[in-house]
Length: 266
Length: 354
Image 1 (tube, rainbow over the protein chains, first blue to last red):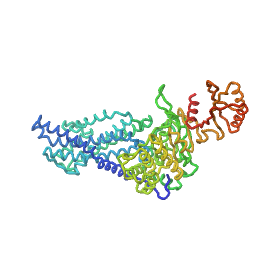
Image 2 (image 1 turned 30 degrees about the vertical axis):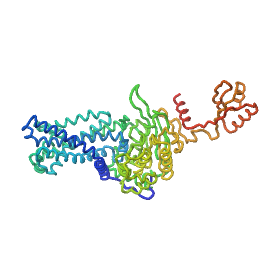
Image 3 (image 1 turned 60 degrees about the vertical axis):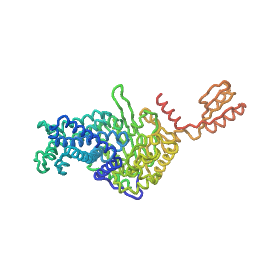
Image 4 (image 1 turned 45 degrees about the vertical axis):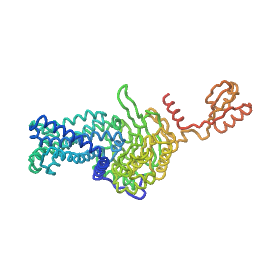
């Protein structure tokens, strides 16, 4: 529809990022039940883990409670980021909004990636609340240098974002396999605890190296600039590699879905 | 188009903003690559093919479809379920990759410059839900304008006019989920237009609407096309929508175009009448006499006499009446049969199937 008296200006990625983040914010503040529900469930499982573990393992658990808290915090972040992307795509299909994103001049994959980042920001907020409650409940203190925690946890979860993109792409292609893909969330527990096994190659897996750095940051109080260059480069490289691979898988699977004519089906 | 799959994301240019500039310049009426020439069709489809599956299970959904749509026109896609309408629309939109053929939007090849081509297009697919029900009406317009590559602040005034035009301005700050079905359809249409699309595809836009809402919706589509030059391609099983809104109708059957004409053209010549006459006096001899003067298209024998259907022009109708008068034939019933698009669709698709 050509305008009569106003000229539309082109939107850039800045506008797109703002639109996606603002939408996420609106849904978050307008419908807080989902977020609160997620936090309650996370805290419930932590309660089971903490009080149940204390009954069974006693002092052994309380001695390692800091590590458990950090791991659980990273796990809630990971699950939030992963399921947000995979589930969001399914919802968009059901709402009939998926195709509108596909025909966006920005391209589908960048839009989905930005939506993933928006979910990540939201997950950081809810996981932060969960962490705070866990600290109070367990009577534990952690080193919380915000810059270090946000950067290390952010890059750690970025690799999960890549896994989520790949899973979302596979769901677009094969449909209704969300339940199977959700099982991956339990794999995150292994990845987060991988540093405990001290296996060098696990550092290349998503979350593993980041989890080790986050433990050092939050338990031992190591600041971002106190990590070795190799550790930081590896953190960024793993995040970039998985995000890139996930992005590539997403592009491939959505393209294949368009070829098969199954993009909007669910 | 070969089997290469560039997709809407495959444009090699660096940013959506850069790509959008071309769209904006055209929307603003300035010359760009000749795409603002009035003689360039809004949509040009050439030899489009799409086949799903392989071997014995393969289904040809679109089979060599070609057509052009003039700017500012409203074109209906008609066809029975499974005729290939939705696949055709999705193939044009690029959400289904065609096997062969080309699509040009405002003169821009959708294969060579998909983002530039689709920046001018939006779609309301399969019913009313094409927006976020948790957001307000205005928030949806801003969001989808951005997704379409337009800075929402620059079209805020347009959005207000759009809301006024569609008579939903008083609901602008209401979450969509709280609105009635008819209102939701209007919001869906508004969000499709929010980014300044010049071509919109509407797939079953009145599905599930009550009579009044469907009527209002039809009027809005017609008015938008007339007042803004919007090009509309709509697919619907609602013949009222097609008859009252569309300048032209393309009938699709088994993936092929079996008719492409105006509504009047499809309904047949203007001076053609079909009447059903019932009389106890219709017997074999009289019917033979009548057949010498007009074409009798159907005969139903009754216990007494018969019911006949005659299709003829005005002159033939007078001749028929004169003949009946000459033979003192009493008519127990006479009814004019209005042929509508449903009949045309059934005839055309039946002929294609045969």
